[in-house]
Image 1: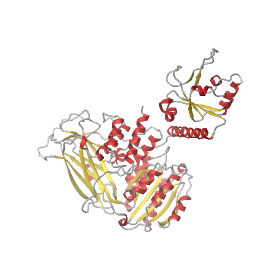
Image 2: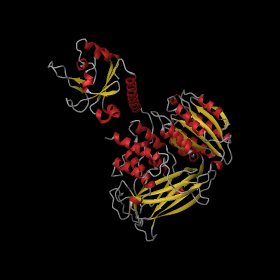
Image 3: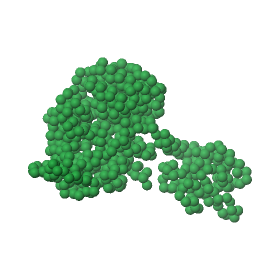
Image 4: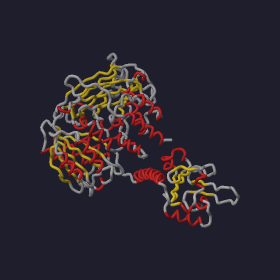
Length: 610
């Protein structure tokens, strides 16, 4: 905002004129004021430069001491009472005052404010500071995301089989939410659609018999491409009662380097870990390792019943120094292995902004390190914090390659969700190396593509190879995947070009009746080395979209929004209002309000695209 210099210039001008607009001529940058014509009763047009066209019809909005005032009230001001004058333009103006500020805002603060005026002005200042911070973050943005290309459509007659690992990570959704709420541009490579879909729980039944998960499929119309279909595949992990959960051996690995100093990093991290502590039982143990320029143990494995002692150790942590992340990981795993609980829940929980810069710090080095450590039987949870220098690519690599999961904690509400309400699902694995392989019937499916899971795709031969790592499923967890399908009787502009093949059959002589696809699942027990297999057949159905379940509609809306954020070349309809309406239709019960929050997020994003 304008400072003391503006006030001194205005006061000097006042010696020659007691007219506020005359006093502002040439003293406040960004204003164009026509000098006084000298005609009695005439007024000086005031226009903010740099907005659309310069003419007298473009009246700015006047805000005096935080309150919107008329042009007449502004002109009554005595220049000698003014402390500062500043100009808001473009997004800075409309972010606070909406369309009323389309011609800019003149913000005036006088020297003597009433208590009510001071509060109003302070509120305005906070909003403006927030906008400036967001702009500063974007200008200095050093966040890192791995680039990837969205999955293409495959011709079923050439490649009828698709294989991928499940993904239980949820970081992409909360990270995107942070970007949108802060008014930042969403980085398309931060948009991993499977993590957006899997942020939400779906109404799948509990598994029967001794199976670790139930299998649920639904086939209906695609909302974004006319005549296309969507196949939804959902897994519901078996919910184990808290009393029957194995004892836990947790090692908190906490980044206390200089980059963790800001309020949304180490202070939020401490509060988040206190949420987790509230879920633990006296038989569970917690150790704390920290790393900055070097790594060290600040708390040996301690019973969770000594909560005060654990909290004291957390509260003493302070940020400072460079980041020896690799060394910290080595020490944390060493501590977890030394206190390993056989048939228990052994896990390292790393909390950082991912900005490793000492020792093993490259993505490749970290991948090699955690691939070796996962052989110990110790699982991994990665919690990302902060913005500006956040290294999403390293966090995702750690989780993907270390038998782990990954969440981004943007506020205490998210900490309560991931570490409180969904604690068991995120901290207790009931199945590991869960793979999905689907074979489509060319009789009904001309072409298909997997929505998301780009960095979780596997070679078809990896499906039966027990040495190949895949994702973990937690107690009560749900995992959902969507395939977009071009039916055999549909001609679509998105169909891949066909090659004339001499030796490959183009049609199937076999008749599989009404089978759309066969889905196979492989998984291992948390402490096992050999996979088990489950087979599920999907029937071809002709259902109208109006009959789709609320879960189908909601998951479709989340995927659709992700495709728009990525500016996908494979969708025709990118109407945000339609996405919002579909999300509302799929809200369902929504006890926790997460789906309603998603609707508000679309509304917020839509308002920035006008």
